[in-house]
Length: 247
Image 1: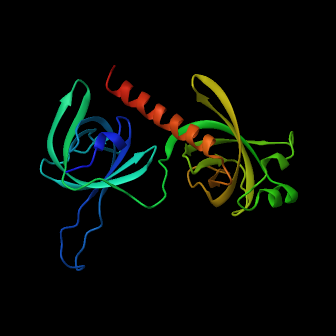
Image 2: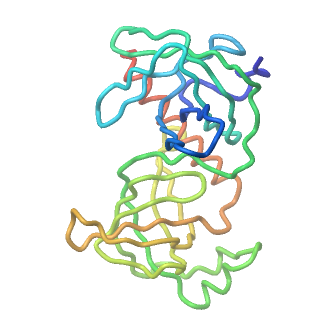
Image 3: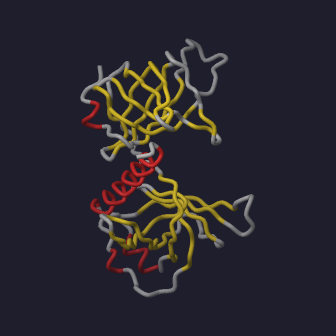
């Protein structure tokens, strides 16, 4: 049924499951329930093993024969299909779901990147007017950035190939452009990134005094940097999955 599942999906990929609404009318429709999981193994081109999803640190025992709308987050984009739970079991300390694909795998057109939860130190500053003008448009000039200006510290709480979310004890204005400076472990070595982003939203955190969460979208990032960040995320996900499996 699935077209070369192993060609597009690999172990360690994040997969989202959403319940399928079988009602024929809009009356009394229930909100679709969603779960997050990871691919453990590709058993065939229409069968996949994933980890049992968790909710508030508790396992969600999805029933055999239940059908779900699946979204695979891969380095090549977002892929969707429908699947049915055919088995569930425990392998060492890992709880496993086996699903059969009941529709073709298709590329999902919505541009979306998997957000990886983390705690990474970051320094940032708002761009000056002349820097911001140079960065606008499709041919933004990162060489126009003024080096060695003062930076403010913050913590990245999730990162993706499209942007990041960070928390700081200060707040930027929405729609402002900022320089984000942080390091990632790439090929076993620390690599520094100096990326410009647009602040999409800012909100005060209710449970922390004088703390603000910022959502940032990268501006004019080159393809090589984006692929490096995506690869870093998938490598970290695979390492986490391997640790969970006790290897």
